[in-house]
Image (cartoon, rainbow, N blue to C red; front, side):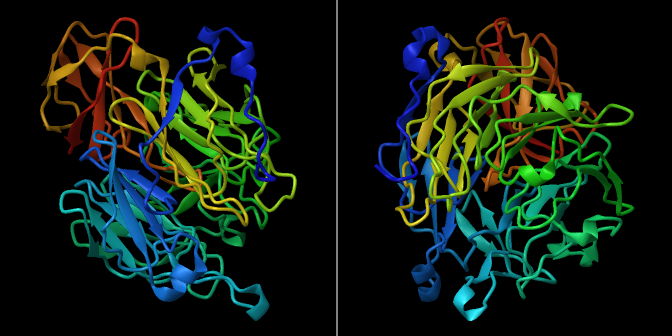
Length: 485
């Protein structure tokens, strides 16, 4: 047994079977690549990006890898030509469903030679239909561990990371998909942010078009930046309290999620830096501030959080501390949070350990996929995990027909197998390092089988979404893909 592993948690074995929700399985074969980044495409397939996969030998040889996993057929495709080392880049979906990948690794760190990690200036765009990378424009600077997220107008904000000289960047650029160009490289307003910009800062687009930095980030190797609401248009941050409930210096690779529904404008941060605490902020409040949420059952770093189509949030994976700690152990516990009751319930433990460079995402059939894990001086975790929540065993409603293209505020009709009581749009994940700025769930107005997306474009920025309907018991269907625009 690896030194950082612990015996599987036995909580579910000690409780009645009904007390632990769901079951875990693995894909029929291991991933052909070291999956460090993953994105759910509107084809229903999952893009698994390794680049060099944190392998110095592959980096030196120029061996860069990408694979595609098809959950419907449980098969992999691995002959994807990869243009450069996308390892530790950033990514977000464009409105047309293609994935913009920014930056990556231009130089591996070598402390003996005094060489820092250097970020790539290059970008690339993955087309889910042709399953090929297309060249994108270079950025003004290199970025390693950057974040990316979509604005209300469909443009993408790219920020943070190490530049091509290994220095922290506090600048941002905006990518315009209509012209395939980047705007000026601009410092984020320096009333605090310019002092230190965390790596992989998690942002959430808010209902007013501003963006919220939640405090979750990667690599806490500098002073943490307080949470803030950022007016991107005026480049003005509104600083929020870095109080004891959030303490951003203790949120290294914690999960950050815009709680469902997005209309509530509440964000939860889960774990990070080995803590079991959670923190919740109501961004509709006149003076938003984090308050303590219900703790998870084990302290975790590298934890993943996934919005489920029934309006709950699953957390899973992680370790007790950074992988370099000689006493680090895997955290196998999995729990499900209900925003309506503000409580966690126990789910089946994930048997596969998930450490650094792991992640999780929702699939169109309602399962949760987990990937990756890069333990120190041990083999990379290649198994793909699949969690089936309790609703997978119930009689589920189905969508028999739905339009492919829908727009804001305009009702559209669907056909279903029976009466429905709710409908949601869930944006597909583009996740790495516990960070997923894209994930969100939006409630739709329901009038029989006529649905309406909120008129506010900021709640549902343009792009592809999974449409789920729910029956009177809250059991969700399998998703249909729709494009909002």
